[in-house]
Length: 290
Ligand SMILES: O=C(O)CCC(=O)C(=O)O
Image: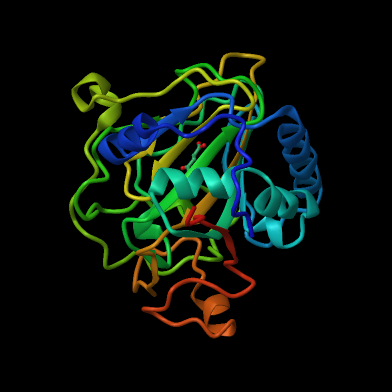
């Protein structure tokens, strides 16, 4: 458990206020090269032996791909070190104004050079077996990324309760349509996500050019997407970690969960209404009282 500050630079009141106002904040230079190298190495390990949850989100006519996998930290030692020893948990805790932070899971998004595939706009919380305002993702590119190719956000979209028709990411898989790790998408809200790409300025869409070591932290309710559209020769390797703060509670949704953690949660003795915990969702950071 981390209780002392191990940050490369302090999180300012302005950073915290920006996160709670916009649902997203850019934090430049938060991770040293040692963490980027570790994640890069971990990603190679993961790509060599993906989990059963892995699936491509796209393979175009030229064979260019977008690859997704999650919860690899259970096997990949480098990711375990990152979760327990890097500044990530403290960053999440300070940004969320949490008193304690549990790790939820990791997810990677790997695009081959020049891929045009763009992530559909969505909010994360409706897909998760977690309910509450206090969840966030730390999105970290392991290579430089241009603003037009980085993950983009609709500021303020985290305020209120999400109620959009969720995109079924399972249908993207070009290889297999027997979806694993998902719960039925039938009984979904009929409210279609607006066409944000048709008029990004009207939605105030923001994204940033980023270097390895920079991260964005965004709330589980913030509308995000639009990443990709790579210049030829440019690839994109992204590591994300998902963190849970004070009001996060377990929920088993009847539709739309992806990844569906209800079976493993039940196996670990967790039930709806519980605070996440156990070795599967470990508490990694606690705010010091001093
Ligand atoms: O990096 C991407 O393209 C997608 C990231 C994302 O949707 C997420 O981290 O929730």
